[in-house]
Length: 426
View 1 (cartoon, rainbow, N blue to C red):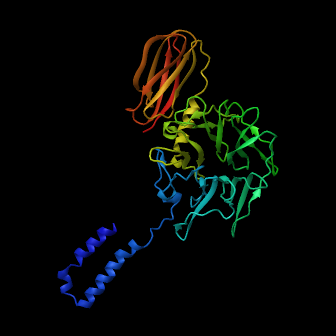
View 2: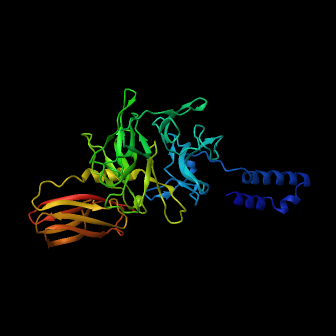
View 3: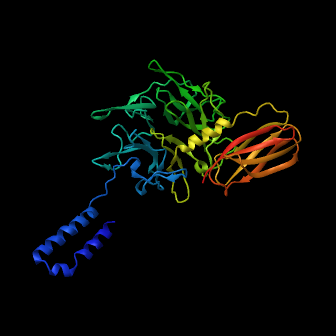
């Protein structure tokens, strides 16, 4: 843009015009014009936009950090960035290789000052000699929680004051003997702390919550079989109003490597829905350390994809959560049927293919049909074929379908029909 203005200026102030001016006037005009164009080139570009001024993502996950914050061989992201409610202050943690005998997590921060994002700094309350991790803003942005190995307590918080952040205060969260606490915490608007805990009886971590009641943290309680599995479940993010929980797990059905993100929604009776995989767009290479911004616009997570030298932060529109809520809302248990025991598909949402799985209690003739939201038939996957008793997987190529919501309907020989929804994304 600036270069096009320069060319236009030189075309306008051409030699023929200069000859018609007095030399001094021509020199002044040229000088002022050139300075007007060139000065912006010499000044740093203003960037006072939320989220470091990065281009927001849609329903396709994007790498978040600018080049200066990308993972290297000596340091990589160990958690998602967390932002103040206005998106103009950021905290995050990195796993840093300081020396052959010293590597641990360290917190960093940046904020908008004088209409520019500041340089990278250590928080005023941080101590780099200790491992510190999992910064987490309260809903109002006036409190920041984190964990630290400094003496005096693992769970900490600081509050915002007119002079800056306060000194850290240790939170007295009771733990039973044999409880091992993980590195990730999340806090709802009521002050309840969600955390990962392993025990001697169950070395694989599970998700727990320590309720904050009358100014006292209660003994952490497991979220139970509704959320946890016999596999590793860890790294929780909790919606401020407890409406949904996102966490990492290596339970069967993973799409990526090591761990995938799963989401569970709170039912009206305060129970949790069965966790579902968050789909290929999030989990194609595995994912962990989820975080949803306080404006509920974006979901952040950590992963390493092509070109990454280590784990980096990625982000995607939080609309993916609403789409998954739609899926969960219709994935109820199969009503009483003498023939069909279960019906589901995975991944959901899906972008290239999905597998529809059904289990028959006895041999039956069935049809399996895909419909769009207008109720029009898209394709017959199975048409009046007989299947034996057992579980069957039908691989469905969705790559040529427009993005949107579809129904897959299983029709049994006795006339029973069972439908589920699936989301196709680009």
